[in-house]
Image (tube, rainbow, N blue to C red; front, top):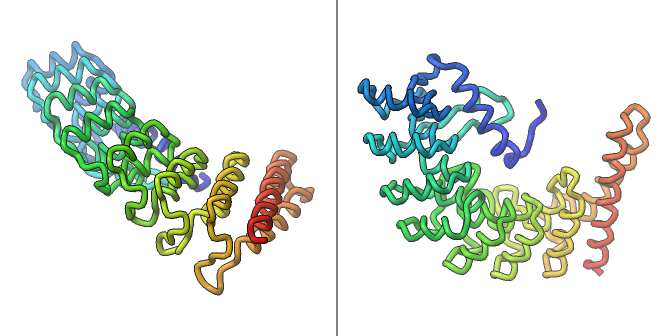
Length: 327
């Protein structure tokens, strides 16, 4: 399996990993109540509750029946479990990355996190009404998967808009919204105290917008005062360098647009992390050479050569922009 970006992993690995948990059944400590809750089998859930089974049993990874029901959007089961006394505040353990060599596993989760992440807003609001405990992870994922109304409810329930979560997928609601191009969420967050220059582990809000290939999000952050040439992480990268090095995955127009937005707003095209690093023009010229060779390689199939040709066009346009703004 090819190595995919973290963004893709956040979308694909979740369902695959959890499906594997369910398919392995007893090996992972999954109970009949969890399976019934996940499938929405309300009759079986009612029977199990009557028989007195412990509602908060956890799988080997700490998942409860309530988490499975929230994940799958089974609101009637969620309500039944909560009214029967299920603990709404249980937090799971992490799922190790051993299932998939290319994934980072799955982070700690909770019923409210699963409801928000999977856009089951009525469940999320129900859990909020029941006084669910909130953490930074739930607020952060709401930046990418929620709405301004949900963000307002979460913040009014006591979570701080600039708290940094320990999730490798979503650090803050603003960085998550920027990565996924959720402009309405970004606007609400910025109007309600989100810091565009908040220090994040190995990244920044602006870098997340760049990595997500979200030109409008880049513009919103710059207008809000994001520092365009902030040096981020151990790689000492900047937004412009990140834009040049980020793989466009066929989204050539978005990448070119981001480079142009950054240059128009005064990004330093001369910056490099150290004297041994390539300048941006040197990197683009290297890319162009590789694109030309790939597009002419008879050993490659026609689709691959066409990808090289499209990348060649992208890099030539970016070279023109860099040259123009350096003069």
